[in-house]
Image (tube, rainbow, N blue to C red):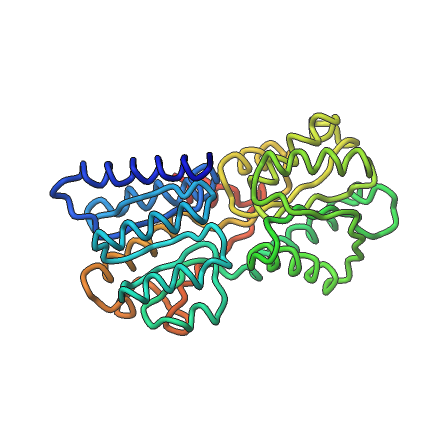
Length: 337
């Protein structure tokens, strides 16, 4: 059944490409899944910013690496000039890069970082994203400051944070960087921590919701902080604890939550006092860097000559994170306008 669905999907894709007629599609932009809230904003910003710069063909990989691979193959056969790929699975980078290298097509990977070995395997590859370590450090900073400013968070008065960690996915650079460095920051700043539970919710709100309900049934009021690798999962956790009576305006029934991304739904909850903070990565900045890169590459130019982009090691475009709390919330609203 799954193979049949993929085949139908590919037929629709080919037919859609046929319908565009004389419009030459020069760049494939493959998003791992449109219903990821942050990537949905990146997709929309790419579409808008690319209008007067380069022909873009956007495709939803529907969280299937097989689907993403098949669409890449079709577009290569049709003579696409550049590939821009938000990998479904970073471990598939080697195979995806090999497709581009075989046909001498430039490729821009974004948001999910491949290994250095994969990046070094081809001379026409670039990466647009962030430093996952920085987001973890900023999460730790938010947690540290809120913990010091709100002694009531320490429910058992033992001076340590009993926390749960909701992770994105196994072996993912962002998940590891955020999980490890948020806790490292706390330890480096003399905040004791006890891990109650952690698990992977694969960046998904519903998965995080179910996971958080399990943690609440097991640990209840022992949970003093919820640390989430992204905002979608933070929203899932918030909705879960609300069902148990938490974060509804009663200071005695409050569990602080911190996420990453700065999506509008989380920013609204920060403004209402229901989530403590998040770490903003701007979808606009990411989209603009991707479009500027593929625009130059589609014309055979040298991206290193772009004056508005700073490269690290000639291949990496690193966009900065910003810690967001109620005190600077307008920065996040501006990023999503």
